Image 1 (cartoon, rainbow, N blue to C red):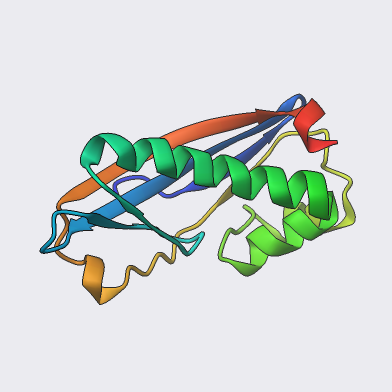
Image 2: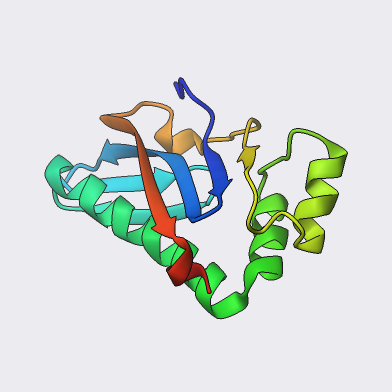
Length: 136
């Protein structure tokens, strides 16, 4: 179902991220949607609005955790929800904050999708980015 694993890529000037959005159309025509790994649920009136809402929710997730919780709590959060570093040294460096301005990529491989979303009417992989000034 998901062709590419979600990722969060740290760059010197910000972050890039990729995520997937899945949706099933309810009997009343409304789409119930889910963003795996981040465990975000939402509803949308049609397929045109699904990605608009998903993009705003993901931007809110990153903005909240980076701007309001801080870098170290953000790293702890994304590791807790299933993102993994390439190796133990990279994970330790991220947790210590020493890779804040360097390049690192975290992936999420163990993606579970609720049974309600096994038969999909909508599925899309999207990406976004956030500049460093928003991360301060």
